[in-house]
Amino acid sequence: MIKFNRMTIKHRSWRIFLLTGVLSAMSISLLTACQSDAYHRKTVSVGEETLVMLTPLDDAEASDTYMTLNNRFDFQKIERYEGMRGEGWLDDDTVLVTRPNEAISPVVAFNAVQTVQSLYAFQLNDARLKQLSEPSAYIWAPIISPDRQHLFYAKVIDGMTMGEMSDANGKAKVTVDVPMGYGKAEWLSNDEVIVPYGKDGVCIINADQTVDYMDGIGSMQTQRAVKVGDNIYYVGTDRTLKAYDLSRGIRSTIADAVLGFELSPNRDAFAVERRIDNETVSLVRMNLTGDENEVLAEGSAIFGIEWSPQQDKLAYIVISEDEQKTGLHILHLNKMTDLFVSREFVDVVDGVKWSPSGDKLLTSIAETKAMKAMDVSYVIYLK
Image (cartoon, rainbow, N blue to C red; front, top):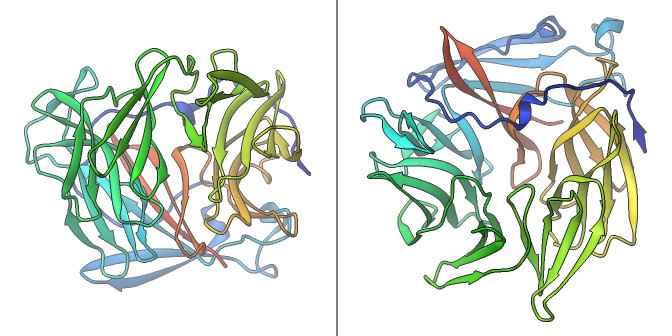
């Protein structure tokens, strides 16, 4: 188990959704932070763009100020892209992003006037953008199917909010009138998603245009659910991880004091963020019944948890009183070694996303520039 020092966190800005417009002009620029002198800087040309990459100092160059848990930063380089939010990976060289479209008049989305957010495929090797969504639609929270062939997202158009499934090129397959603004969709398979619906139910949407509504599942604290076999798992309002057996109509408790959870790619384990006391949370790996569990890390806050596609690693962000331990980590589950990536990502918007090969990470941070809110995406190339 990796244990981090305690500190009291009064505000958890990483929990806050940013639903305001962002800058329309995209630039690619240098990652700036108080630790920026811990990196080499190199300027290269990528298509018509100039890209500033960061690479870590080696052990001989780094001062004690920048020593990490294993005396090195575990990445090759970081690329920073302003004016876009990274949503996931279409392939190892193409990311799915949303970015503002200020050429279109603002729309009412989620009870506020918003700049239209359009959906694009962004190619890393030449910085080319391909628009996938219709220009007038506001797109929110897109997710990519495990086989990278389908997308699902919330769409606001003509004042109406709906859930939509499309192919990887943005061609719509099925559109459903479900309240998409407050719940998080999850893929059940390559062509099926589950979305919290109503007071205590879920909606299952398939690419073949079939839609199933299930009520009486249970009130959800985090407005997200996953389904494995006949069981639907969610965090209840009492902060317990629950399983609802559809075949028997029975609800059971898997674990208590749960803040959040992530289902593994093989759908046979959970990575759980669990409250220990008022100052400490833990990262726990457990099976689907909760009777086998292992504490992997502790800290004042742990979030942004994401399984690698091969299920052999966990990426997570920890907050610690010791600043040298605060930041993005990768835990190798087979070897139980913890690798420190960077201290830059304690304010990520929606966790991190692994590339299909498992050698890159994508994440986004909401920043302010010229008194305006702006999304900034980072692509982290691992060693």
